[in-house]
Length: 139
Image: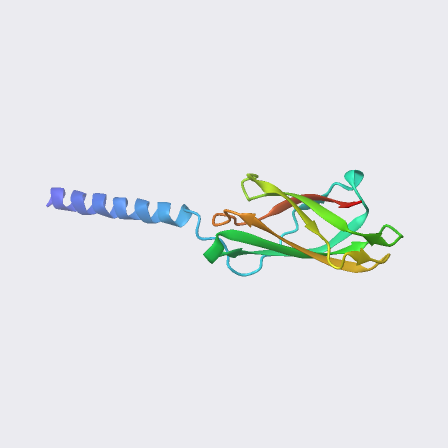
């Protein structure tokens, strides 16, 4: 009887530990747009544009993260062919890549808004996204 009780207790502990490990495993990346605020503008390196908003979501069929957002021109002058240069990191501060994206529209009057979007590959484990960015004109 003692051996049977010991065996059942041992089995229960093994099952509990397996379930506990399963709960701590990272799940699949989020499929709905996610809004993170962990962005840093390296203004010293580029133009004075303000990142108003950005969101991202995982595209499972292509195993990539689609990032989009909007910016406001705070330079006090009209700008053309402006690029967003981004260094992207995941929740573990793992480097995901450097991307450049032109703002749309390509001509942005002072104090007006523009949008951007770009893709990061291998995004299945991304739970949060951190961006370091700056803006530069093409020419």
